[in-house]
Image 1 (cartoon, one colour):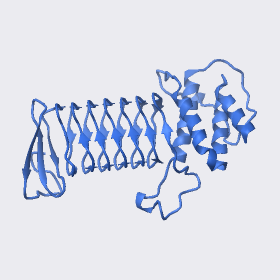
Image 2 (cartoon, rainbow, N blue to C red):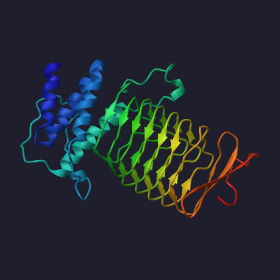
Image 3 (cartoon, rainbow, N blue to C red):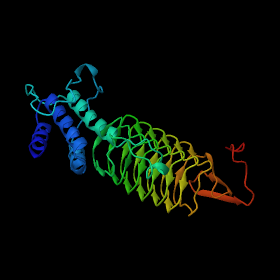
Image 4 (tube, rainbow, N blue to C red):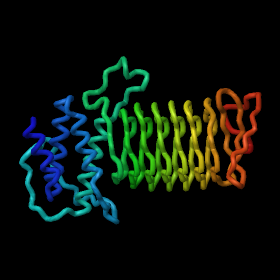
Length: 306
């Protein structure tokens, strides 16, 4: 195994894209067959994605996709001709897909202790993608322990729909260039989106924040949806900027929420914490004006002000 691992890591440094792909597939096979070494191999794949990369300006070109079978674990060869940005993009997409496939867990969170995971799922992984450039990542229904996406540049739509972060989740300073989908995601520990920038729609509908949720100086250039989201710990949207609609319909803040010095467009939203109706209005100065009403309002739809 040591020889195969060493060979695979060496292949990741090769000039030819086909050889780098073979190295990734070799690492994937080693991790699948040797659970005790999975975290080390995930670390290597994450380190590869953290390396500097400038995506091609015209996006991926399907005709340049290198074809290397998954079974190839050694011996791949190709003439070294420099790193073409389109080919390197395909290598990085493969690295992303390996993580996405093996972190994917379709089991409902309540059944994960009783029901066995699928054979392709790598349980208990930590990922560190600090400063990486990720292209259209799809981490739908993925389950990880700690996740570090600090200063990640997400190019293309970023999908974390139904994902579970069992440990701390760091999205501080991240940039989302297109839509970001965190609908139904579970954040079990402290979660940071401080100074993150969402240039397109951001969706957190139904997300569950069990511990602290921090959106300090976060910028939402388009719509920001937190409908039916639950914030059970400290929640801070201090100095956040809502440029478009900010929706908090039926969101719950049992521990309270801070919106100090928030800036928002003059759009009405609704918050429904713990059975109480809290009608929230962002005024023209960006301050939060809240009026608690002791009788619950209808829960099926917002009123006419919505």
